[in-house]
Length: 124
Image (cartoon, rainbow, N blue to C red; front, side, top):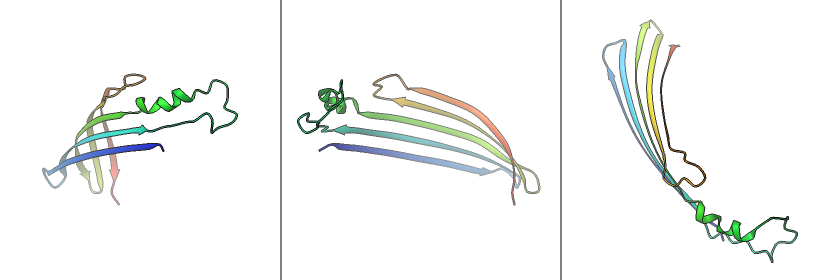
């Protein structure tokens, strides 16, 4: 019988600081660790009739050896909110994220992303 294992752990830390009645700063940090795997995949050619050409039971049975997933991700966000008029708030957020694939089977998926975005909101 096929088995499947998944574990995911996330930690989130946030801080908000009200500088004045109309201006606040914020920051958050997220850590994520995920792992997963398949096991005990057994396909028996005597139990399935009419297998398509090229179907390889042995290769598919061994796929569990290549299923170990282990990734880590860290994300940081910093920004501010500014109430520039009654019910109107401008926000700016900067972020950075780092993704680490500890078991790259087919291709390397490690990477980083960073950016800044902003917006204006009306509060009802």
